[in-house]
Length: 614
Image (cartoon, rainbow, N blue to C red; front, side, top):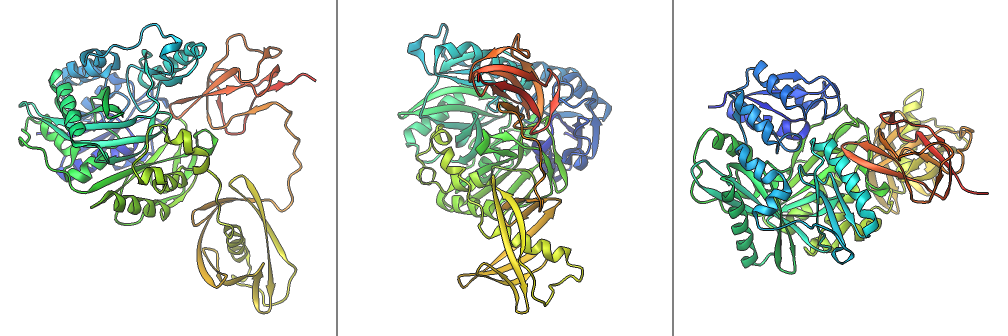
């Protein structure tokens, strides 16, 4: 029996595993980097062990340090979570060699399936060799790991070399393995997967399907179970292929077999030899705790012969600290407040006041809704997200709500190209037109010496706010009859709540202020100074950092005075385990290069200047 479990991971998945351990009476051990010293997973565990450093390569990818931490803390088992070392056979062996119980499949099974190239060979599929124009488009893909890292779509043959180089660098940074391969890219396929659970007694459960077609940068955003609209015959085929993959490597524990479904056919992608991020939707429809089952299987317990039958429908949305309208740029800062309505499941590694840093994945939380039907689950999740209190950096929350209500998704006609087709409409700014006024009224009340309004006539008051990239100026006036504001009746106003009557309809605005950042219901605003600061204008062609990150590469031979062409890659930033390319905006001369490899930059930092010919 397991008495003490170390989770070799961080954030949301560590907290989620600790929750099950608490229910089972298992003591927990966290590991944390220096950047994660005060992270939620380190605070909620019974014991925490420091891994010196900040980056994954220094900390969570150091299997030797994790094993030492487990031994030092008196753990008798290790759960890898997902990502990091979860599909590293050498780490699994090191855990076993230290006399600890490994919560996962045998190292040989990991080895066979963790490399996507070897997995395809096992399933009788060969990757592309010499790519020609006839093969395009193709997908360059990391052989190890997952989560969309180390993947590039190539539509032109002359882009293949750059794509492979970038994928190798990203994969090496995320997984410690830079091996990549090339496979055909299916344009309009659905990403469908089968959850499996296997014990040491020969039982393999295909535990239902999931659809994970809504993706950005090849990383899943919205997932659901079961996958809607699949013919019964295709579901049986998917189950058979998944069970075949598991039995071919004597699999044990929880795992996922992934497919692209196109034209009624299933194309094997890979087998993930670990728990998936989207496992809560399977838990919701099956009624079982997959982490608890992982632990029981590792202890030698047998599964019943028949898997539980699915009930209802579940949908999960991943909340990311990112700006979808700016190429999904990750965001950092303080998460002031995160609260979801009752009736949905929240899995998160953050709590109010936590800092979102640059070193790790940008996912803040997963919100999961379960209901008797798909339509009800969609409505429930969209409503919950719309009414979630989320104060802090920019997130993808509005995108999620719009996606869940998009006719293509509600009709289950989505595929992996959904965001390529619809991103512009899904990210079109739609701020509440009355939010700036509510913010101004709350601010005026908060600054009032007497905590109320003066009952004397006054000059119009003005306040400026920036929201969704646009500046708004609002005007209001104190009169003997109260406040007036452009035809809007002010029913109530204090520092936290404003009630306005617009065209006879009363609306409430909850206002929260954090410095110059103001959140009015779901609209985020930045208070602007009354008199704009006269700052020097940036030189034309200035390249600013779109996000916080680290400069990991500068184009070979690039220096001040170099001739560059429009669109030419100049340097690469890494933020939250993803690499982002900075390109020349125009053809001209690089007049300034302000950064070096290894340098950390903040959003808006000047990276370089490209001067166009006069």
